[in-house]
Amino acid sequence: MILGRVIGKVWATVKDPAYERRTLLVVAPLDPRTGARRGDSTLAVDFTGAGEGDTVLVVDEGSSACGLYGDDVPVKTVIVGIVDSFDCFGRTFVVN
View: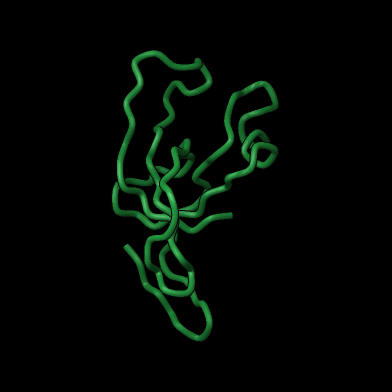
């Protein structure tokens, strides 16, 4: 799983029918030790109702992501939770 922050939204006029009524969001990964952004952004299908600026939990593995949709859906990265706070190395981060 990846801790990330939603930094944008994607609109697609033509897409696989499995993505109908699902939001596609751009997520920047965060370092859980500092809360700072690290690495390249990724595109994720949202299952939670997250929005821009939210800190989220992201599954970035094909088999776990397909478990939410089914094996015949082309999905690899899925937002599965919105984070309110987290503790890491004795520090508490409150987000959103």
